[in-house]
Length: 244
Ligand code: IPE
Ligand code: IPE
Ligand code: MG
Image: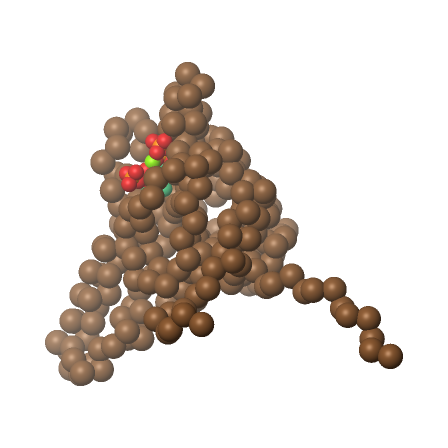
């Protein structure tokens, strides 16, 4: 007799999920609250999402928290966002450690305050040995700026005679990006109904599946992550090959 068919295995989760966390301001405005209130609730959505991603078996979660272009916002809002970032780093690291989560920050640190840079370095060091999930926070991050920096590094190496121009290929460039060692995102989610990339992971996201959700970031949580991942599982990733 044939053995009973085993129940269908759920498909493995995407290895790397990246999220453009958008809509905090609109969430607050709809409630007649200041934008900062939206950012505060956004930080709670970050906690929920990190927890859910870890439980679902995602290996890398990259969150776009502050773009290179967000420095153009009013000084008061930038100060509030940096304050929330400080709070997050101070309060969350022990929780990250408890849950086996490693923190890595990408972006231009030269524009961040010295105390925040110190907090980032301390948080990265304290969580460096964790293996359940890598949480990548993109702060003061811009995809174009990152590619420009990598191009500059390559140029300096060529000038110093360490690298032949013919040795510059996609692997050489990728290894000079801040995401060196991190697999490319499989799934990029953007909340708030906007359908654009806004300078996020331009190189790395070349073949990412994109999911755009209308939900505003402060309302995002486990259900929304699960539904974006189910959407991802229905996609046919072809990487340029013929449709089967
Ligand atoms: C996302 O929410 C947070 C950051 C970009 C820092 P927004 O602040 O962009 O909210 P909206 O898009 O104005 O609603
Ligand atoms: C993208 O959101 C940046 C982050 C989520 C950190 P923005 O709100 O800054 O993007 P635009 O201005 O709508 O493109
Ligand atoms: Mg926005």
